Image (cartoon, rainbow, N blue to C red; front, side, top):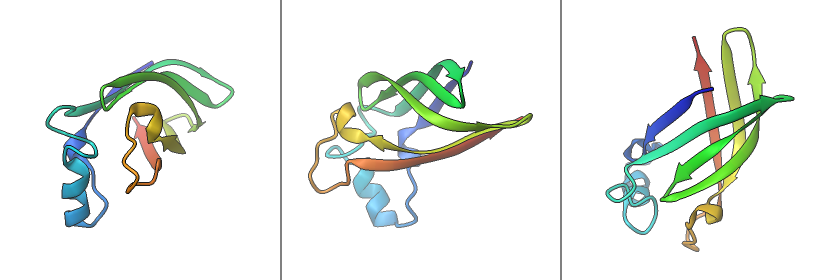
Length: 102
């Protein structure tokens, strides 16, 4: 298992004005919620399960992963309304993509 911590102010869309807006209190609110944390609890049938602490809400989530001898990667969609983000100006679904390797 592992624990991953992401600095919320590291969000990068490639558009600096949008990045600044996403970090503001009406979206990610990085001053109040400076980190996004995920702690694994299990891996079975290429599905990773764990607890995601995002925007002050802890929730168990599961998502598909690809596992090789030296890495684990994922590309999935997260529904942010499950984490109290209900601003109608933002898509409720956010694509999450990562690769962890040795």
